Length: 415
Image (tube, rainbow, N blue to C red):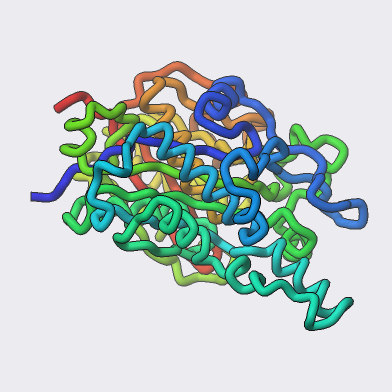
């Protein structure tokens, strides 16, 4: 018999709040977290805005000595994992840490460190390159830092599937507990790519919104007819997943139960999703089958919803293909409208938002939704959060390289 898996701790580090209280309050309020870039001077860039974590102080979570050895992407992850542990009230000294693991989704790794160290190499010479350069830049080190700090000896992995990374990390962790490999998983996603190269790279691809530099609050507008590209975000989200029996034994608060997961690839293009959404639809369908539920059981979908034409149109088509008439009865929203696209962190933060919708009975809105687009006619929960009984919800993530990942969460009713 497969183990049941529940979410008992959450740790968001986001452009709309650090910690669950601020994050949940911002979701309810439909807060905008997008503004002019402060990480560097963006004056010469075509896109000058992003969703930054402007109130982050690494010293609140990490020893000063260790901060110097960690890129911001790893700092975000470490902070989010500590918040999730604190929220869960799990005493690590009481568990078998050989039966606990850490899975971290990430898209790019230490991009800011890469920029800084290349600058030193080319302008000042080899001797100025930091001895911590490689440990800071490689994409596995966020998971390594967390495992070392928490004394975790079980499976510790880094999942790199672009914008699907965070959801893949959660789904793979779910399977590890479900199949009996471990009892606890610290799992999430992290990204810190609001850097000169990060913004420049996405801008020259024509992926970023460039026409709202003077109006950042209205730049990210998923599913709206006047959307013009996505906005980069940064931050991290972490969850503690654990076996239901463990959670019940310690009387933990259960935000939601993880009941389904699927991943596939549309094998279409390195950056553009297939326009018909066929394999996005198949991924959603397989997640429903894995969860053992019917399409009409879903009350809410936290959409990938990037505010780009290809994603918004393709995802809408996919939802209609899977859910049929029920697509018009369920709620669909994109929290990227508030935070921007956090790349490898997006799926994890959006899973937290989905668990919030289930636990609190409040569906986050799609802000900046003003003008309906032809064919995009679902209930996108425009502009204001909505009180609702969310029993079962899905969270979608679709990434460069054709990666698709979907998870299904359900309200835990004490059974």
